[in-house]
Length: 533
Image (cartoon, rainbow, N blue to C red):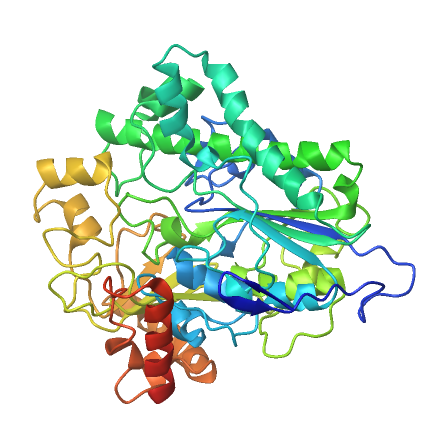
């Protein structure tokens, strides 16, 4: 036992076979490339007409390779379009509302007592490591995630500020491609450092969590670094975004960050290939929600906010070239990773594994009961005039409809005006604020209050612009989806429907981090308040 960073750490490396593996089996390594704010922007998703204009501008050969040589999901959704609750859900397999203070962003705490798949993997002999972001805030992982010596970023982490770093060096006279290659060496370097810490042939789980697609990226970087032309999007923008030069440039700047993310995936693949371990590794690519700084996206339950890429590759177990249509929630990755590793010790973890889908030989709808997903959100970051109260939403998404329940329609969904802090800043937000007012459709879609119920017919209205919740013709559909959603929320112990006075409306859930306390002091206070309540 040794003390690291104020914690007592029991180091226990379990050699041999897992309870879930037979003697002589080689358990797969696992790499999880999880892009912060990376939605469904990859060239392999050009078959989705809603994203076709964007994905036709870019080539993502490395993400495409994982999909082409493995399985790709056409309908993958995050449990919550906010990074911390989404990651809390993935780590535990639970719906985000059952992760206590992991259900919010600002002021979040994930209890050391909370079961996570990373701890289960470590307990079964896997070496766990990560670079950059696994969870918020600050990646003080502690016992909630496993070993304290699991962070690897000494080769550098300017990759997560790719365009800002690259353009500053270009402005100093450097060659664009040389600078990009130099930054990318950090990715492989950190991965190599992690791999050198294994005990012999110990299987590993590596979480690569770059924030490259998270705000703020450098304005003009899409064209200067990647040759993307904003005007190529003229006349092709979705109807909820302004089709103006400033916004088109903002989009291609984001797409440039997606290209950097893909190059980073390529570095991980290169390292594994050079070591002869690529085909022994389950390689999974996804992201924690949609594009930031644009209306209807991040922090929203519309598709552009909750849809993400999801692809997985493991030759010999996952057949190549398969595309599945099962409605998929990322919270099921916890059990999927444990099934892939043959781990049986998973007390307290939840979720329905995707492993049988991935190892099936079928495409299309593989498991007939996967016909919907449930998403939601509570408080994100707004701490303005609303007294830190959340904007609580839950939604059910089927192949044909999206039904959203807004529990507090008198509150502002993007935070209180005039700041609207739950809508990330950037050129698009600024252009809307400077050029539109609350009589404009796009302004209202971005910032205005919403009715208690929303219903969208996805076949007739793929961009979810026309709320038909009050249309009598859709009453049977609305009633059915409302009842289905509320039944699931009750069965899954959602405080928003079970509590007389919802716990998310009171401290410590409504408190931002107390700046007068250290982070550890604030966490101790928050846990005490939770235990008392």
